[in-house]
Length: 121
Image (cartoon, one colour):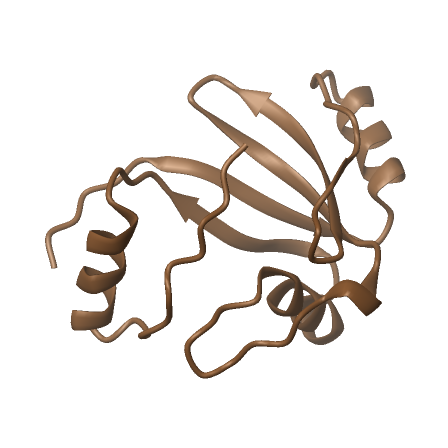
């Protein structure tokens, strides 16, 4: 499956978003304000040249929808990752310009067959 892609962003899953933001700030990075997702996660963005790190906290677990056979749940994936593995880099997002075409190509290559997860800033 020849699908060369650049890196869009990394998700750094943490238990305490404010503490993680302070650490990145102490390390010299510019950290954006807290953002709230409707599916129970909060984030702060660390913008770098050409990509970013998304600091992510599972802040409102009651709002997290579960996965279904055809629907990926960003909140559930990260909640479950945190329970299994603790804090760390939970996701890597690649660049793309055709979400449906990408989904079809990944499904054809055996990387899952779920609906497109559409989210933009």
